[in-house]
Image (tube, rainbow, N blue to C red):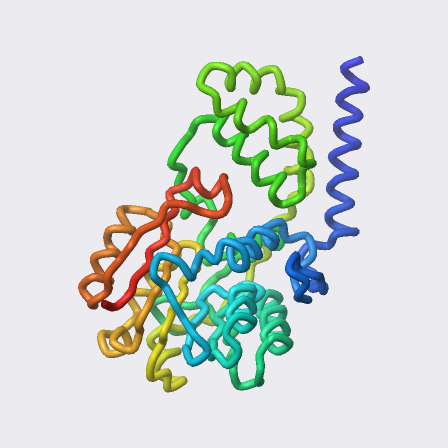
Length: 326
């Protein structure tokens, strides 16, 4: 019996891998209809796309904790991905001016097309195919086609530091996010509360070992390696000065571990042009407190949120800082 079972698992793994590589073809641009009815270009096989949609159109993560914009605002969308944050702003505030900054070519192309179809006028959006950091030149970059929101100049393992190592918490979070993203059927949502129970959770986790094996094969057999390339890199200071941005009403920074480099590149004069900042922070080596102090030194009031859109993200040391000038 065991040889047939193992053979079945091997066949399942091979079939899963071939399906993802040759049918789904992650990283291929395609058009889709968003849950709110808007048309958008995205990338096939990107499991994070629905979560990014929820973050921007449902939770409005970057427009909370006192962050406000209007149709006369100028916004810098640093780490624009396919431009869903930009689309949400263009839809809500016609006439708003936005600079989209995205280094991954395929994501940049999708962002540029989405901005063009949503903007009231072509000059309302400027897209920059560059990475931001603390220098000028080029930098090795990694593009994760199946999880584009984790792409960056650093390995994921270097910037995502766990808050919790409890196995049942991770299993519950993966199931929650799988249902939310449509990867797993809805009835699975009954399991996470059970897995989080102090005594019952570990017992249920052990009983369901065959399920974890199948889900693990489904996940890992469908994973493709990250694509590596050299990205052009510049500084936020250069973007502000070279494009004569006299006032940046909002700077949103989501750059997967490079946030401290981005913020250190801003001169005092360029800082004075910025009214509001939202930064996702990977709290490595007390980075949240370092950036909080930096922002306060430049005259901002700062609030911190530890709550992320995904349950798995909440198990990592991720914070979001909301900085507003009084």
